[in-house]
Length: 101
Image 1 (spheres, rainbow, N blue to C red):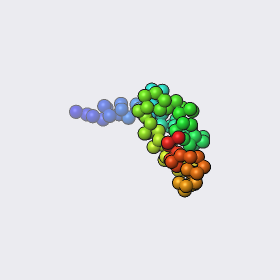
Image 2: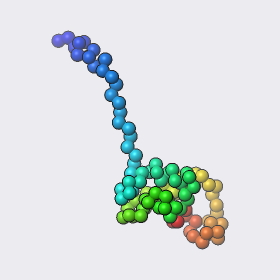
Image 3: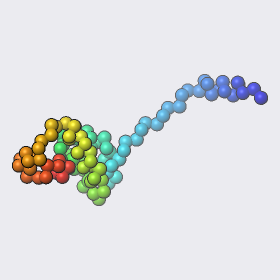
Image 4: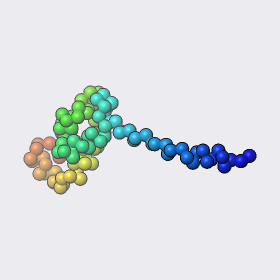
């Protein structure tokens, strides 16, 4: 059988477009994606309460709380120089973990 005719048809078809990658949703109650949370952190949110106010994440069932805290820890530390735990607790009266908000 001559396969060249079959393969030549596929060679002229336009390339199949890939679907856009879906954002990773962290808060299913409000549809907040990981990218949304990272964006507000980069815009200046440094505590869980600030992220909650700006995105509504972690204000419904609370199931995404640990994921939101993980992102805060990861991205806030990249932006700000480390403070000693004495400075943080002295200044703000908390444990020094920005995710505890």
